[in-house]
Image (cartoon, rainbow, N blue to C red; front, side, top):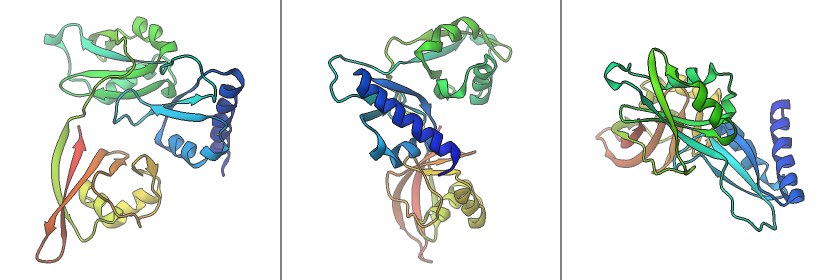
Length: 250
């Protein structure tokens, strides 16, 4: 276990101890998928139960709540959803995920204080820890050259269903490296390197080996590409290759 993993693990254990000792729910910052994997791999070391949420069902970055054995009050995650709208839509630029994240980071905010950020043609919003929400609402007035208005939702959880782009591909097998190669339109050797470099996550867990066989409903997170849901097998070609469907989160 390297030093970074050891430190992260100790932090989780400490939060679980504090939860039981103080009798209150303790919360982490928003965890990356790697950090979530470390938590799952070391859950037997924790002294309390835990739950996770990122504000909506398909959230990638998640906050952990460490819950003491004896708890006598209702609680919620200390996060808020912040909506972003252009103040003058007629003159607004088309903003990207990178534009919005860059504007937030320029305020000196740590990335771990910000959860998922959704930017598409229909809406823009992100999740943030409650402690920094007033600062963001006051300071973030423009993104690139677009003047924006921000509004914090009262509820920390929202009903958001990502939009999907439906696609199909053909592979020799549904082994992970073959599936990644087909989805990203790259060679098998290139997809294998991505797997070995820790750029592929399957159902939230980092996958460093290509021996995994994808099954219907699997969520694949591909760094530099996006999030994909593996669909169903649609049939076999005359050359015994497998045709499958998949959905790209847009």
